Image (cartoon, rainbow, N blue to C red; front, side, top):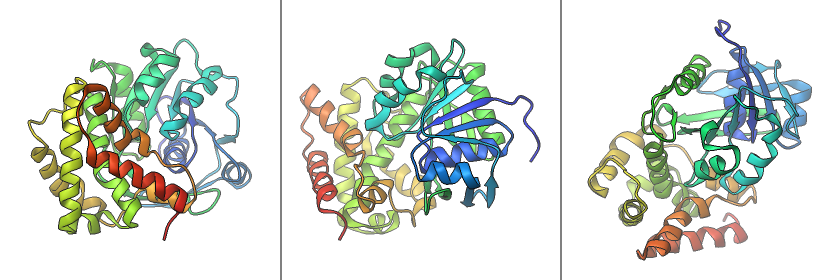
Length: 317
């Protein structure tokens, strides 16, 4: 792989599956990358490098730093890839790495992360990203990229086309992560949220692939009800989804978004199998929260939230 025109210092706050894959590919491309995460994954990377497998090829990346605490050094770019419930803490922990010209990128699931991040590091430093690729950590020190539904998108939260958003998109794309700039990243983040609202919890509840969910008429019916509720609360919250009705999104989901990910099982299922907390409160739970705020009933999403919370306690079958 050719060296990039400009080597960028990059920190990844949250070196789990998505963060490790992103950071590893950027380091392989020649950028100065620091992964910030937890042991034993971090200690294994520090000792033996990061092993990347899956659809982006097989690579062992040793030219990167892996630490459990953020260094007190300004970075050019800080990617926030933690779970939604850790956004506030991760943003505050990242402050020693954030200088006057540092760009902070939210690359996360859920609704509200960009706003939380901007409130801590400043709106002027904050950029949004929407990534729909799947990854897993099969063992400490390794990450497998399993699926990609579409290109990663990067953009300013106010929709302005800027050179920095284009530069980040170009940097990711040049590292082998298909990426392009977006002039409406907040809409794209909502679109990803709809995808997750539809599929993430049902995969966790039924321990099923996205294809199994799509092929079942009862789960398809349930997804339409959940998406209909999400459309109503998004409209009430002032979000422009760029679609006239839920049916337009459903057509896009079944015919464009889902086919490349038919064999995928959700990250929420991975969390339940691992005994970890899920992001349900920031996906379907955010629909319930906004529904309560704007006086819109959300019974289907509310039921799904409660089932997933119970699943967190009971565990997988």
